[in-house]
Length: 79
Image (tube, rainbow, N blue to C red; front, top):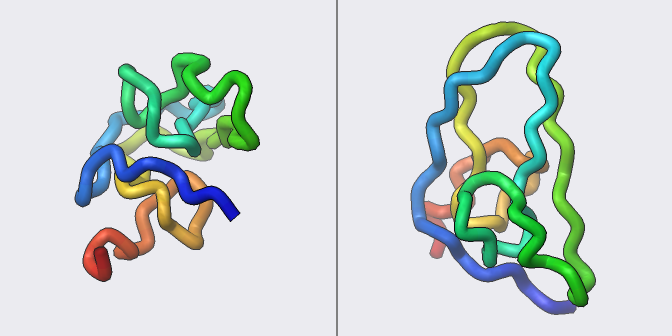
C-alpha cells in the first residue's frame, strides 16, 4: 500500500463554519494544506469531505496518518 506524504508533523487548526464542506488533502501533495488542490490526480488518493456541524476550530491531520479521517488523532507523535 502506498503511503501519503507527510505534509507536516502537527495538525492544522482551522476555523470552520457550520454547514460548510471542507475537502481534506489525503495525499500530502497539496500546496494548499490541509485542503485539496487536485495534486492527487493520477494517484490512488482522493480527498475526504469534512462537513462542519458547528462553528469553531477543528484540527485537520497534517501527517496524513490519522485513523480519524481528516481530523488529527495524534498519529504525528509516533512519526
